[in-house]
Image (cartoon, rainbow, N blue to C red; front, side, top):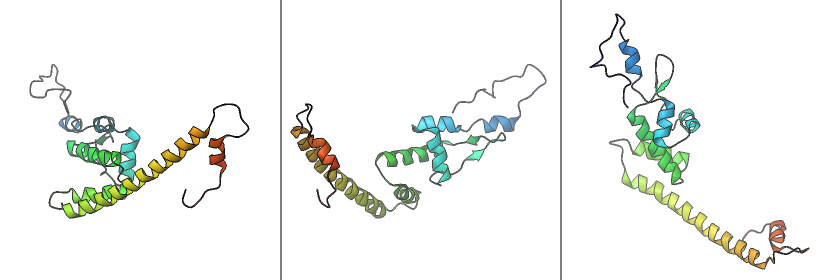
Length: 162
């Protein structure tokens, strides 16, 4: 993060000086900068903080959140895991395992394997759904008719195994 002022080369033109504490506080990323860098919504950052998925950051003397580059890496990890469909609980476990010295590839593999099984099950269900919907749409003439296969399918009682 770039500072607004280069303190090494700055020569004040009057007797006024910068308060070093305030300049130091300006070094962290704001919540908006963090959200933009990680590619998430501002409210997502607040939500992740609220549920403890990311740590609450230090605050400036003005009460603003001040995030570090480590916070940005941590948030990017969470965002990527969510993109891959991992649950919040899985992400918590993965974050604990991602701490240096805590890495256990076998535990990570176990979490990822369980998630892969869930993804494969969902894909199989979607393929069944696609076939059912395609067959029903093919039966529809598209003309004004008192009988519509798509509506009949939607109105049909649910069965245990379609």
